[in-house]
Image (cartoon, rainbow, N blue to C red; front, side, top):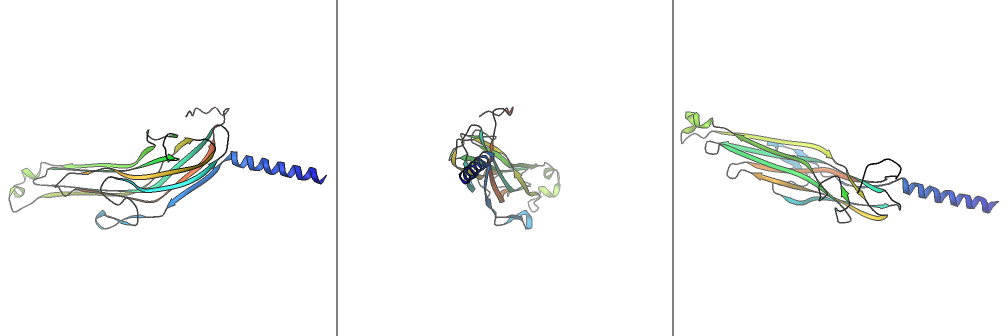
Length: 225
């Protein structure tokens, strides 16, 4: 009788472990740096990506997850972050038009590759935030005071924003231990030369979460990988 009870308990434990593994797993990583907007719209705080030039991987979060065996095992990968964009365009009597552009994108890979990642572009990337700003005028040429050598007319437009974003990526992977990486970078940074125009970016706080899910063959899902 004791052997039967022990055998039943072992079977129950094994079944529970198998169910827990097949039902899902979870992990994540966090970046605690914080962006703030200060005087004149400039960014403060200890956030990442605080520059006005294109940069690769100015913030990277890595996490690992162990997946169960069986078909249909899929990772739901969600990078989330507060992003900040700063654009300053300035026009003068001699510069009638100025523009500024900057963006922040996130790229995801699993085990060093984006081959299994879907939901973004072919490189496993998605644009989180991007802005193009332009101002132009012909008014200065019609104002008498602006035409004199002693008077400079100018117009300056500054925009500075912070906003939170998240995006879901999917990756179907074999069973085993996997490393998931989310990397943010500044892209498309450009401003009209010699105009006093400028751009900047900021990132933080942020996190990446990874959840193991399963697409069952009889679920009616239209997902294909």
